[in-house]
Image (cartoon, rainbow, N blue to C red; front, side, top):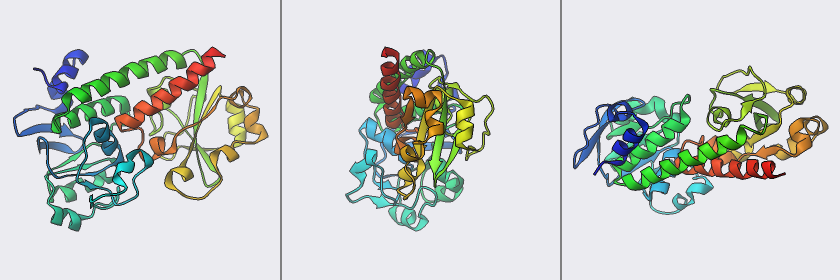
Length: 311
C-alpha cells in the first residue's frame, strides 16, 4: 500500500524525493530533507520534544501527544498541554539545552522562531526543522502534515487533513474572487502596520485569493506602518484586522476600539460592515502554519464571504 507521502506525490505529480529528499522509508526510521538539512528520523518516537506551537497543532489534529513542549503558556487551541507532566524545554526562541541534555529525547522538532538554534540543539538528539516556506505556506503546511503523519504512523489521517484543506481553500478562493479587494492590518500599542503579498501574513492574498487593495506595500517582517488616512485613501472593500496585543496577552487599545473612528467608517469596508477581526492566536502566535489553525481560518473566512455573497 502506498504511504500518505507517496499518495500525495502521485496525485500532485511530485516525486517523493522532491518532497523529502531521497526518502528511504524503513520499518524503524525515515530519512527526510527539512528546512535545515537532511536527517534520519525514528518512526513513532517515544519521547518527542516539540518547540513549535504550529507543529503541536498539526500533531493534535493527527491525534498525537508528545512528551516535551515550550515552557510558555500554550494557546487555547492547545489547552490540553496546559496541565500535565510534560517536559518544559525552553521558549519558542531559546531551547533549554540543559533540559534537553537531561531528557535525552529521541526526536526534537523546531519551528521558525528557534530555527537559528538548530545546530546547537542537534547535539542533544535527532532534530528536524519544520520552518515553513513563507513563499509557499499552504504547500509547507501540507508537506509538514504528511511528514509528521509518516513519522508518527498517522499517514491516512494526514492525507485526509490535507485533502480537506485543499478543498476548503479552493472553495474560499472561488468566493474571494468575486468580492473586491482587501487590506490586512496588524494593530499593536495603538499603532498599525499593513501586510501584503510575500509577508508572514500575506496568505490572505497569496493563498486565500483576496485581491490586494494597495499594489505596493513594504514586504519587511514588520510590515508597513500606516495611518487612518492611508486606510481611507486605499479604500479597501475588506479590512482584515489582527490584534497583536491580544495575541501576546499585553494590555493595549483593542483592535475593535482602534478601528472605531470616522475615517475607517468612511472606507468601503467600514461602510459595508466588512471589517473582519482575525483570530490573533491562529494568525500571530501560530502563523497559520499548523493544519488545524489554517483549516479553522479558512472555514471562518468561508462563512464571512458566503454571508456577504448572500446579501
